[in-house]
Length: 334
Image 1 (cartoon, rainbow, N blue to C red):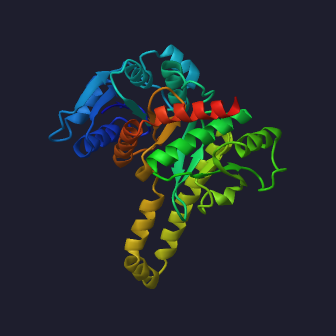
Image 2: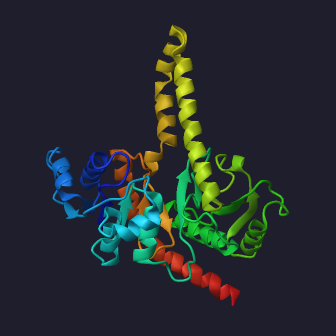
């Protein structure tokens, strides 16, 4: 299995990207192609003793900064590291790509270079969120901020495939994120998406509210990319604030400090449970290729796990199963 990793993407590139690639090469059965400024990447690799031979470097002349326009940058900087990764995937040199860089640029580059799967109208980014039960897949979290009802339906279809083959759960439940559970709630396009899902073969449970995302009520939550991205950023912020507040309270006096010391194993387990780096990255579902988008602030462990997710995506042939699901849905409609 061959994975192209954008060595220049992310807040901590190239140091943490290279370190994560080295970890993955040591733990996973795959070949890794680091894409970016070859002098910088090779310099970083030299900091790691005994770098596995399964890591190679492919030069890219530029990269896209987080504050740049996604579409303009992809078109003007044709040799940017993200586009080069997508080129390698399109040419069959690699089986999947991983980037922690500009999310919008990753969507644009992947869509332009790899195109969409037959029958899919818009790609969607799906991310796993921790809950009281099994993780919930939230889709879309940023690829498409102005979807049509059919796009939400296809997000649910792709999410169903991903959940069944990656999380190994048959017939996962699907809900549409709305301001209330009643069918009459929401905008016109939400109501139309509700109608499409209600007559589908999916295990559709209806509308769900924001509070349902983290209580495990539903396996897959469908929404537009604008709302999904807000949900994601607010969730990350709340988790960070709660952690800091709890830490401050536990340091108030010797008794609470002793209690914190005794409860450290529980706190460590909780931190691991809600740590985004454990989930690795979010799949860009719907493109005719395998693309995993990592958090911009990913560290080495997050990059390693993103490469692991990319390997799973390829191993379980997610795109082929999505194509089959789309065809089945089309046959039912005709």
